[in-house]
Length: 260
Image (cartoon, rainbow, N blue to C red):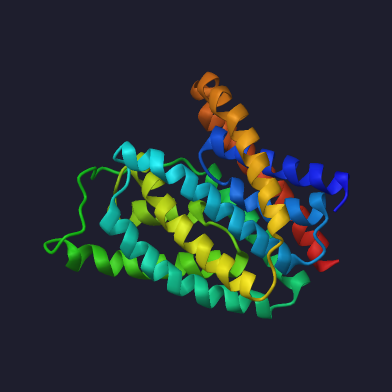
């Protein structure tokens, strides 16, 4: 591995860490195109497998802080995660079986859809005391299980953490506040990322050196983004919209590269 590749991998990780720190999510969806078009990973499957490991590690490292702050609804998270793990395992097998160029084109289409969804104004949930227990199971389980399974399928297929899908899925299923949904989603992101990463690793589709370099870059990006995010807190919605536009543009480029 040459110096240029090493620097590109660290830069890619830094970009993802910076985005996560500034807008609170969505950075992982940039990992695959960055690995393919910036770092130069030849195989889309190897890019997906490597990205899945990096996403899982980043989510796990962020989970502790949210848990200490009480922003994790553990029963909801575990239920959603168990359903998602099954979906992710099936999705990863389907993704590995698909032609790499077609997979990239579909990934680009997903990026465009995600970007468009991020442009929509968010609605605040109104049930901060939601709990999954015997009295609420009949209402919450029919919502959490199918939503978790569907999100897991997409996360496994595309090798993404799926935080941008998990958060609205949790809000839709339980009406928990957004800040709690973000903390709870990290449990699910970690579980789905590890499931997808294990599947791809067993097939030899993970570059562990690149994983290490991207984690180093992610720490650098987060170190820059956290204090910068505090300064730009009043412009958070504007940053989210700008990031959404970037995701749409990159997704369109990935589609074109995938079909031509």
